[in-house]
Length: 372
Ligand SMILES: *Cc1c(COP(=O)(O)O)cnc(C)c1O
Image (cartoon, rainbow, N blue to C red):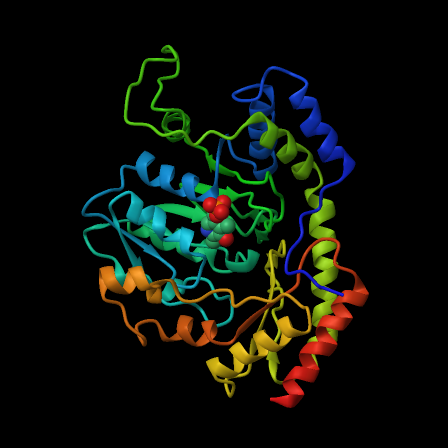
């Protein structure tokens, strides 16, 4: 038996909704796009939602809409998926990393102020693995220094901190809908904001720089084709309507893991902070400090050898080869992120993972740890 790292949760309802679009002539910029944006804005509780073809495109458009470019700096975390930092660079600006909090694994708000310069334009925090802890503190620091916040909420759809939803801690925020996310549109993303001007700018930028009321072949600015088709939007509408069910299923799987792994002192098992409502994105355990990176990598290989898919979310962003080449970062620059990064094991995690599968994963992991 094979246990997968991630699987989408697609029912007949999603298949019907996609097929229904295919029976109309409106495959792009049609009614499903408007419906998806309206439903999403309502769910998050912000005024505007703008669909795009990926989370990466969404973050890039935020940079452009906020006027961030050459000579500017954006403060972000080195412990995230690469697509938090690359949109900053695509816009011509420089990502400036700040080390992470060892418990939440999110950017350490207390370390941000020392990295603010007169070139700093924005802070780009991430709710890593769906955990929104500390996002309120990031917003406070940004307010104090008059900085914009671009919230990378791509891993946190449905999470909340003190009742305030992920996606509402930024000047703009972005969600992603790749198949491993809480909801999927195949590929896709969404920009959220309360600011009409910023939203209108994103609408123009995603659609070849067209102005709101000008013709199809009139272009007001340099734009892109980052549109999301109505086929994808129809899928997204059904998926979003199931978000509470998805959250509950994922919470159950997380609970099984927590129960089965809690008593193993070789592992650090993620927990939900009291002030957080986590919409679980992935389930990442960490090995105790005594384990080396090589041991972790051997454990990953052994798990794969038992037909259990696992991953090492995330290698530090600042140590990716092109980052080292471009900015000269080195081992030791962000010690907390590096030490966490060498110890992580992302276990199989998705809505319909069964109790028996979780039990097999945990049993296999413990057996492999016994041999190390
Ligand atoms: C998934 C993800 C993105 C966006 O990914 P796309 O594949 O472009 O949709 C951005 N940031 C983080 C932290 C992510 O996990």
